[in-house]
Image (cartoon, rainbow, N blue to C red; front, side, top):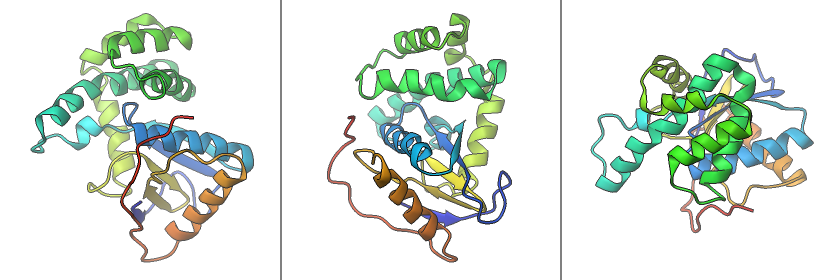
Length: 214
């Protein structure tokens, strides 16, 4: 994982009671980290605030392999719908909608994004018309602003997820399966300690397995 000390305007000093989490709904590794954050709230005095960022935005203008470019083109849909839901119905709908979308895409293994978005909106009681945002740039200004806020804390050479607390932010952690119970708390304690160390930037090793959805 890559950790970068940055300036945070949503909390002050070393306050770790609020964690801001930026995700792209289509990223399986962000999904794994989000499951960890949910566990974290149960074992530490931490409240998570949920925000979108976009792999499609991050990769604009880059020379990508054809298959990954196709995925990035497709990735606009879910993040646009989550953004539209937040703008029209408030921050409180972001996490439930992310859960509904992500459960279908990741452990569910679904790849029909249109069906997934329609089902997810229905599950959380949001208007079906929000699915139209998947193919519209009507909410892209808000999407790009949220993305810029998150990526601005860690730099362009990382991806999703981004976690921020106090005056510190980091990419990751990339972890599978998602730690549960006190193990989730210990991982948080370690991330806070390492990420808060002045001058610390990076800790990484090669992944040897894909996401484990348990």
